[in-house]
Image 1 (cartoon, rainbow, N blue to C red):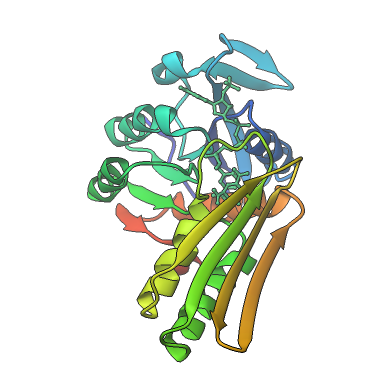
Image 2 (tube, rainbow, N blue to C red):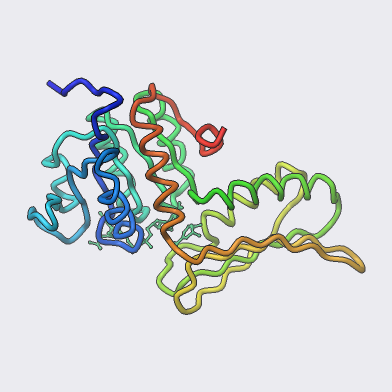
Length: 243
Ligand SMILES: NC(=O)C1=CN([C@@H]2O[C@H](COP(=O)(O)OP(=O)(O)OC[C@H]3O[C@@H](n4cnc5c(N)ncnc54)[C@H](OP(=O)(O)O)[C@@H]3O)[C@@H](O)[C@H]2O)C=CC1
Ligand SMILES: O=C(O)C1=N[C@H](C(=O)O)C[C@H](O)C1
């Protein structure tokens, strides 16, 4: 039987996508907060079962062999997403996911999972982007008929386009009545940049967010994990977390 969770016991965290760029940032930052988190496992596609720096490693095909946890944090790829979501629903684990490029069917599965487990998915866990989305909606509402274009730039290894954040900003513009267009650039090691441009004859507004470190996303996701771990089942949004 699970140990009772008290506010003083660390949250048992299972990391899915641990070998990746985000996974490595999450491992480092979670390990720096031993009073808040106990890392019970790190899951990636290629590893077998072994222990690195005190953290048991599991291949995604062995997910069910991972120890019990209070929350799973997932930053992987769309092809890995169904497996981790099914695991969380079946085993009653809370899920924080930042995996982008997921399909409409996968989004619907997230909604359905909210009936059974606490689940929070966000395309971007930085505070700055949450504020930007709010600004974009207000600007779109205040500027009817203006052209709205969203330009996103990321590192060359990013697979999905437009980025999840660009689509979220597009939704915000849509809430304000705009029909946005998207442009994507892949260059060098850019962590993540998003510009929303509002243009009409004779004038132009640009709202830009630049991420220079993945730690902002990892910190936001860990904050979300600590918040979500002890909540009742529901499909939560980042706005619920930020109030
Ligand atoms: N919401 C947010 O704030 C942010 C979201 N992201 C998103 O997070 C995701 C990860 O980004 P990033 O870390 O840069 O990507 P990486 O490619 O560096 O890492 C992906 C990870 O997923 C694992 N993986 C891939 N396929 C499978 C599979 N079939 N089963 C299990 N695990 C698998 C990889 O394992 P292995 O290495 O063994 O192949 C790796 O650990 C992306 O979708 C990205 O867009 C990124 C930054 C911020
Ligand atoms: O893949 C990335 O790197 C990022 N992905 C997220 C997205 O698709 O918006 C968030 C951030 O921009 C970095």
